[in-house]
Image: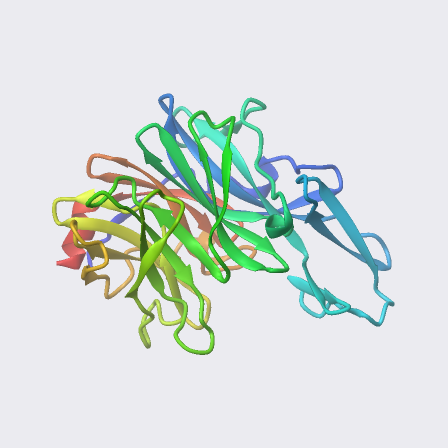
Length: 348
């Protein structure tokens, strides 16, 4: 198959050492999965930053957010019999689970789409309230007229769901709460209505019956969702045999809605595929990638915090070109350019 991807020569564009921790007692562990948009002639990203606490001797310390979004550090003695820290990612104390890292969202801008910088004018977004106490993750951005819709993963001991914020200026945000209840993630809103209705991808999980499949839903207002339909399931022995989920907002083409998605196999190797959906009824799948349109090949995609991972939930479209921002190895942010025409040719 002809390659449809051109990676940028400066990749990775961002690494953990390129940003400052949110607080002195924190260490940036990973940069992950940016949402992308354009604003005032610049390219913006909403980057997930995962941090861990500096550890104290004889203790294990974990971060959480309180009701006001303030970071709190909880310390547990390693000698405490109620503590189970056998998993490096999740510890359990007296029956309650805690994450060893916590994520927030940073807003960065670039004049050339390559060199991104932070500014005090656009402060970070942190978890707030009981349903975001373990952080917020993997934001996707959809622009509908003058409003930006931010769908993101809300994490707490109560579960993992999808939150929604809206903004017009990237300074003031309106929070709309949880729009898809646990366990759910990978939500991307279409950037225009279809037959007067909002549409969105989402990914509920069902470990006992069903699986980690890609779904679509519709809404009269972009907040209340129904008429859920499963549009893509995992496939045995394929690159998406274990789970799949939406990338960024789908792209409208003459042939249909083009959606780039991530798929993982049972070895947790993440690649990208594509779906083509009917323009008038996006729940109808016209065609789907049989092989990945992009897979881990470069060293920064194969080695890192969690290697063999390419994950995207952000892109900027310019004519036939998709400027796709993606997380690599759960540690770096990178950029690749793809051709819409070439992707569609792989689906024909």
